[in-house]
Length: 468
Image (cartoon, rainbow, N blue to C red):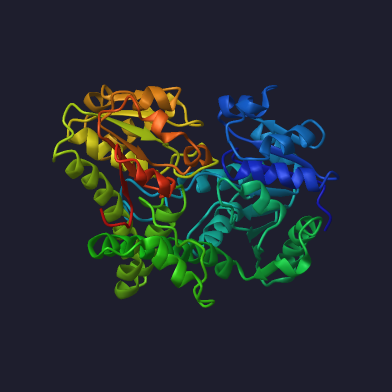
């Protein structure tokens, strides 16, 4: 089966970049990305490529080359579904905030709506590809919805989870460690699977395209994120011990990483992991384990999230204790709000949690991030407090967003680094902090400050995983 036209439902962090690269590498295939959010589609179509709704290094160059040639962004969901032989589902699957599984299970509302829309519109056979991160056996439910349309259309459902790291997503797509595709073992299922394999083969070596059954593919995504997050929580738990004993967590991590069985990746201590995947996927894994009666397994993975929450709480407590036990009516500068560098994504960012803890104690939080808008920062605080049953307005009055780090740090009692932007590591910190309250207190939540700053007695630096 040779695919001539693809559509992707969902123009977010996964759908937009993934489809842009497929269009770039497969100029013979027409790729349409659709979304019901007209503002988002307008941003993808903007003449100014710096206004794309997703920031990723290299993304605007890919969009510039493919857009208008064989890459299109549209709100015409029905038209794109009808024209396409293959449909990717890249819609949001947040953690449930209601009912059974609240706070842990994946909310499949958008996935089901997407499947029902495909079933309603389709008049020819379709291959439907799960791109969103989904619980095991979701493909089965999707196929039930699709086959219940009564239109006499045949559907094959594939699982093709994304393994993108935000900030390096374009390079991850260009040179993937592996592309995972799960399909039904029936002849028609295998034919659909090979159709997707043939698309990726345009730029990915065949030996890196791994094919499995659908259930293995779905679980592999959850398991991969859980293992990566486990490493982060493990090194962060050791950072607390290092601070108490005088050990240096970076020296410990370096020594551990030299063991070929362990390796150095994901052993960088920090204020905690964030992003759209790690916490959501682990909680989903916990819920699935409990659903199948595996309580001990569920509790094991739940500890990964608990340690991550503990680390964020520990960092905010360190700030409060260092500032004489109170931050009430004190200005605290936040350098960075995105959950990691080279992205404007703030979902589950440690900065949100730490800021809320300080605001709860009466602080004024002044934020500078080179890529995150003021509206996004304020919305994060509002949503966090409403989710936890609090009135956000009083705290929002004490959040101030600045256009420069100098404005954010002026007259501050302390500055906390919450995102590891490369520029922060190369700042002239003595000059930047000269208008802060003396002696200057810097809280290095991402361990990026130069070591030689410690030689200046006017700069008191508090780092994750180092005794003070």
